[in-house]
Each structure stands twice: as structure tokens, then as C-alpha cells.
Amino acid sequence: MSESASELLRRIFGYPSFRGQQAEIVDELVGGGDALVLMPTGGGKSLCYQIPALLRPGVGVVVSPLIALMQDQVDALRQVGVNAAFLNSSLDFRAVVETERSLLRGELDLIYVAPERLLTDRFIGLLEQLIARRQVALFAIDEAHCVSQWGHDFRPEYMQLSQLHERFPGVPRVALTATADQLTRQEIRSRLGLEQARVFVASFDRPNIRYLIVERDNPRQQLLAFLAAHQGAAGIVYCLSRRKVDETAAWLNTQGVTALPYHAGLTGADRQRHQQRFLREDGLVMVATIAFGMGIDKPDVRFVAHLDLPKSLEAYYQETGRAGRDGEPSEAWMTYGLNDVVIHRQMIEESASPGATESPRKPG
Image (cartoon, rainbow, N blue to C red; front, top):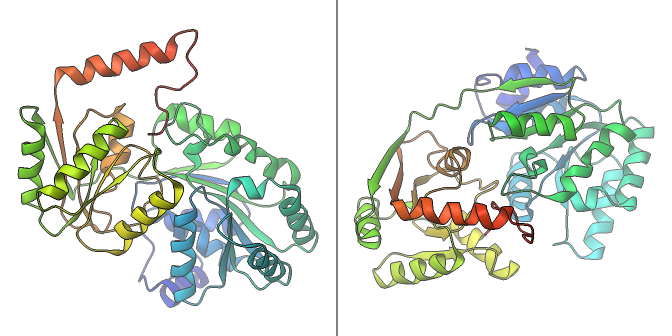
């Protein structure tokens, strides 16, 4: 590992050394290679592209699907002296123009862009100008599992990101995800044109998470008893339906637990407000469908509870992996009953019927 990368890690980010495969990934990208990185939530994926972006000439272009996450990452980078910015629909026209000017003037180390904006003629035009001056350090495609049509976080715009390789073949690319499923991994490589990329798979063992599964009896009272052992701690309670989310959050508040609902049926403003409160306040419980979770950068989530059986083992791993990102002891708790299996089978059958228009794993 080059000394400059290690020095940068210590000086800017305050870490004494790289963890696991981070050093190898940084080396690969600094040298101009492509990489696919599968690393568990909390494993330090961001550093894998932030360090190379700072070491290579030009700006690192990061494709990120979540506006709130972009804001948080840019704020954190600015606090440690990195010139970072984002372009997404939350900015007014004046702010967009000023950010674009900073980009063209070479003032930015990292620019976070929503996939929809990156694929516009306007942004592609900016990239062409920068590429002509050799001022793009790398492309980082975060939450790369969004390319998978079978995933509950599927984003159709991700399917078009192969354009980056087709238009700008000389710029290294890294795709990053916490999804370990073999089928999804192959889909990412195929759809993003990363067949020749080096693949880095970190250990997905999370020894700090204790798993507890109980047979469903009186689920609300069982949940309340579980939460009583986590008073004052932040956590997530997953439910299968929007209605159950709303009802569970309302009931928890009557029991003295500060709980917020989150699902795709809420307005964008409500979802963003609830997410910001969860990220920035202590001791909140988020009751949510699977619409909540991707890119949630909160290290001190002490528990993840499931009132319904998750859609798959992969989904369960992703969802419970949002607990204990700081390495401290955390719990994954779930109630189950035979009715869960019946409901899932009905959903699968409905999705497979000729008139079906929704995926069985469509976001909540």
C-alpha cells in the first residue's frame, strides 16, 4: 500500500490504518483498474473510493441514489476539509449552476450525483469537458445492487450506467454494495460492464449482532417487552405493509416509545423529515417497510426488529445489518408465524400472474 494513501487516511479521516481489503481496493483504483466491492454495512465502503479520488488527478464522481445520504456524506467530508458537493433535485437552479462552475474550475475533490441527473445531456456534457482535460479521477457507483431487477431497491436508471464505460473507457470505475447474493453480483457485473473488474468480497460475519427469533404469540406485547430492554436506544422495526407500519408506530407512541413511520405512501417531505430525525436525534424508533434502509448511515442503531418474516434470507441479512455499524453489541429480533409463509406465497402467486404489474419485492 502506498505511503501517501496511508498518510491521507490518517491525516484527513483520522484512522490509524486500513481495514480488511480496503488497502487492496484503493491500490487497484489508484492504479486505474476497475473493481466490484461487496462489503457489509459498516465495513468502510466509502473510503474505498474517497481515498483514490483524492489521490488521482481530478474529481471523483459518485453515483448515489439517495438525496439525504448525499447531503450527510458531503457534510461529513467538508468537516474534514475535503471539497465535496452534490447535484440533485433538492438544489435550486442558482445552486446547481454554482456547483457546476466549481466542478469545471477544478475546485471539487468529490461530486455526488443522482443517477437521473448523471444521465442527462447537460451532465454528460460537463463530464466530456472534464475528461478532455483528464480531470475525472474515477466513477463510483454506490448501492450498486439497485441495478438488479429482482431487488427491492431496483432503480431503472442504474441500468443505463453502462454508458459510463462506453463513453469514458479510460476512467476507472468501482461498484459497491452490501448485497452478497451471487445472482445479484453477476447481474451487477453484466449490466455495468464490469466483467473484467477485480472482485473484492469482504467477510460478512457480524459477531457484534445477537440474533433472537421467537414464535408469534402476542406480537405487540412481545415487541414492547423487547423494546423495554433497549430504552433510550435507536432502532428499526420492520413491517410488511404500510398499514401495519402506521398502526404500529401510532401504538408505540401511546406506550411511551417515540416512534416514526416510514413507507413509500408518505410524501417525500415527510419521509425526508422522519429520516433526518432518525439520523440526528437519539433514541428514536423507526417503524418502516423495506422502503427504509438503503444507505442509512447511522452507526449507533442498537436493534433491528421484524414483526413479519422478511422476503428472503438476503433481505434479512441486509436489514439486520443496519444494526451495530459502530461495532458495539446490538440485537436482531424477529417474531414469526405460519401465517407469514401463507402471505408470502400469495404475494409471489399474484406477482407471477399474467395480469401482474408489480414485482413481489416492490418497495413499501
